[in-house]
Image 1 (cartoon, rainbow, N blue to C red):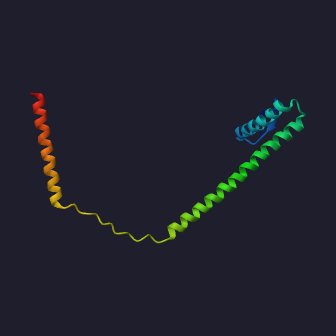
Image 2 (image 1 turned 90 degrees about the horizontal axis):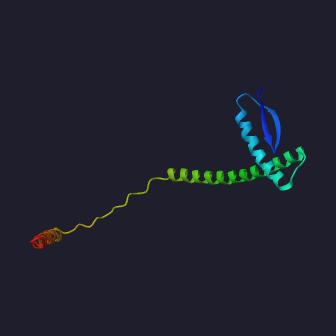
Image 3 (image 1 turned 135 degrees about the vertical axis):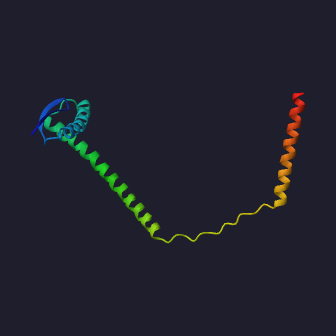
Length: 131
């Protein structure tokens, strides 16, 4: 069983852990050290047991808050999944008929003629400008 050296609140500890769990222990120790360092900076030197107790309580408080948020988010997720299931269970809506107005051919012909005249005038203006 490997022994890992950790530092919490400026104090070193040797802790045993399972093989392969060293990085998890280091991460947990870093969280606890962060809380303990906050305590030490605010209060000053504390007895080891009190420092660890207070830091543990601070982490427990944060964890409780996160668990509460997780429950809320999980409830919203469950509601959303239920709504999705209900919508999937409903039959597809009837397709609606969409009517597209048809542009009369005479209007299309007139617009094409206007476009051709406009191009002709533009060409003529370009020729005069170039001369």
